[in-house]
Amino acid sequence: AVDVVALGESMVTFLPTRAGRLADVPSFDRSIGGAESNVACMLAAAGHSTRWVSRVGDDGFGDHLVRAIGAYGVDVTAVRRDPARPTGVYFRTAGDRATDAHEVAYYRAGSAASAMSPATVDLPAARAGRVLHLSGITAALSAGCLGLLRELTAPRPGRPLISFDVNHRSRLWRDGDGAGAVLLELARAADIVFVGADEAEQTWGVTGGPEAVRELLPAPGLLVVKDGARGATLFEGHRRPSPGTFVPALTVDVVATTGAGDAFAAGFLSAALRGLPPRQRLRHGHLWAAAALTVPGDLAAPPARGHADRLAALDDT
Ligand code: KDG
Image 1 (cartoon, rainbow, N blue to C red):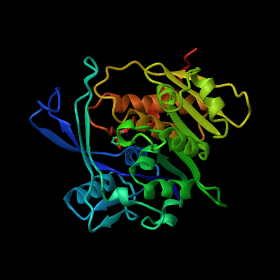
Image 2: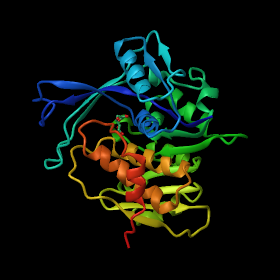
Image 3: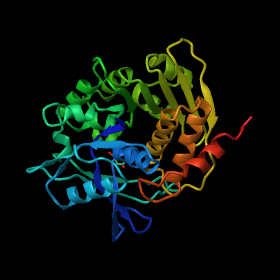
Image 4: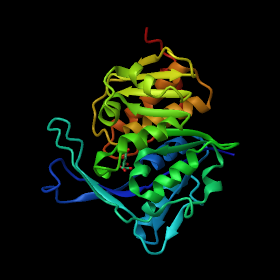
């Protein structure tokens, strides 16, 4: 059986060759992005069996995504080609932390992946893993995509563990879409949830820190509330109030934050699949996130397992 199946839209990503506004950058390097496939690629690179389920266009960018993601060792046999709709692409600025002038330009409306639905996706392939990793990005893409997430997260015998990264991308939602309600419904249906403390405030108006997020999401057996550069808190089990485990993040020179959340989720899931204890799951999340924070692209190679295990076992008290 596959360890982790990740389902979602991936895009060819254009990374600027230098810092500056999109209006000023003259050239871009081709790369790949996609929150869920980033998770699958990192897990595959770390030796886990993974599958990516999605749709791409019957075009060169679709060929590139399937080839590049497959090259990480991810099973791409359940990726379908759409003869009519194109593969999505996006452009973004380099990590301009100092100016806080980060820009993202998506060209994904009407993409092949936005046509995902229970009718156009191989559902048995999506359900075949121990863990099915999903994100809130998919919910914003189309009614069919939201219907697909509802179908996959509905209770049913033998359902894989649902891992859900809230990933509230406000640029993809319109007023009236009810992003907060939809993302809350999906997070409540999941077994493992990743959410940023700032994201929880923006999405649900929760201001009381990790404990308040747990109040809102008491059901997931594993809830990780990430507090950016400070650290992350893990709540386990279904007890209320459940004491959280906080582990500080690493201090790194950030090149670009894009993809750090995906890397955190991948590192955490890897450690959880290997049965490592709670603190070490968070440590692996931070270590893998550090790998993504220190490269310009959305996707980084995970730290070598033995090395990460030794670092994760260090005592921080
Ligand atoms: O988490 C990184 C992703 O945001 C990026 O790779 C692109 O999937 C993407 C999105 O929808 O923003």
